[in-house]
Image (cartoon, helix red, strand yellow):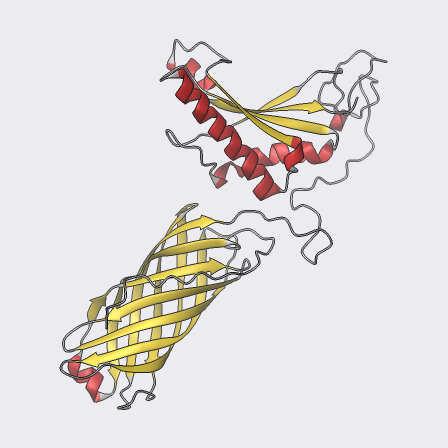
Length: 348
């Protein structure tokens, strides 16, 4: 029989719950372990303490519960034990950079000694550990636990292992998900603004000061819901950086995205254009394509993470066509590498 590959990847399909952290996220990685054999004399006499390979896959269902699959192989001396497990994880501190968890696994073990036929037996794993996310899509961690293979193999051999593992993981997917209208998960946005108290209107344009994005308009002048003159736009620069040549919006910039989401929720008649800009280094056509990719990525992040309406968001990459400063210095070029959200009222 062919030896299984290092990773046993099982695609688990489950509805994403409206939550942050591991909800809706996928992770996979390596988990080399040190195992100490116990159990029957057959196992103890043929094995010893050893460093063993392993791999895992995990799918977050909610902020606290995940399902996954794992494969590991114990191969010292004159015995080899291969383990295929389905696992349930409980996250103890969700929405945290350090994520401790408890693990319960059920699966199948293949036990084979030197010059003896392979046997199969059901197994159980109990463990606990933690993942530390040093980046939004990378984690390191450790796990300790107990692996029991019962006497349900043909010869009745038991394989008990205490193990300590180091884990390295890569994570992808996830983000804020919008619950279906009317479903149990539907509800107010986690970033919804509190109702503002009745406030003064210093420029007497009919828009209270907390909602007036253009203070100082002449009294009696017709203005939009943002307190601005008709046709006037309001722009905010999003302070975020991208890896060189990349367009991925890192989660540490969610505090910038929420500014756009809050404005869209505060002014229901307003639309936003996400503008991507670059400096003049490199070819103009490549800069324009990259700025479009980054503007598209910001728009997608607003929709996926903050439930912004796609109909109210557009994305345009201007490349180096609209510099905000001179490209003659590094300081000026840095100012030109930017993403801007420009708001305009659709109803006056």
